[in-house]
Length: 254
Image (cartoon, rainbow, N blue to C red; front, side, top):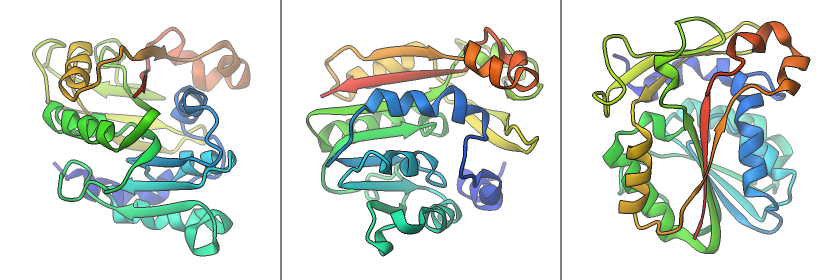
């Protein structure tokens, strides 16, 4: 199996976009932006930033700084290229760096007011996820916000291997597959698809990791899927997913 860095280095250009195009640009990322709210004057960490789609949206809120970190050097290259006038090099708030967030030696120093992780934890084992959660808690300033999304852990067992989004569990079971890597694909509205992966974890695994990482407040949790607005926008694309639990959004305050 190709490692995650090579997978995204190879497919980076397929992730590049300036407008909502990928399925989760409609069903997940806007909800993350709503969850973090006003970022004016704040420092935001975008953990697993990919090619920077969310960071560029955050920049519209006039943060002091957005620091994006991703495993793939090619995704970071693309993020910098697409940042344009918003890039740090042009005097903007967007800073990008290739790091392995699961390696404690590479995890960023300093602190932040907001941290987001949009589909990062589905590439990490439960233990590595807990380590990142702990380090985010340490880095986050008082009353700071941490929001993250992951594929819904039930989705793999509910959907066939069909567009526009699936995760394939093969012979594995929901309760017997912790840290097993499932393969999947997610589509863009123009028909292009990208390979994804999901290191399977149950709801219990997410709550246990947060607790063991020192998060004592109960998180806000929302199951995300296709809305009527999505169906009205493009019924052919979104109807196959109507009623399906696609993602989970967790929001925590320190």
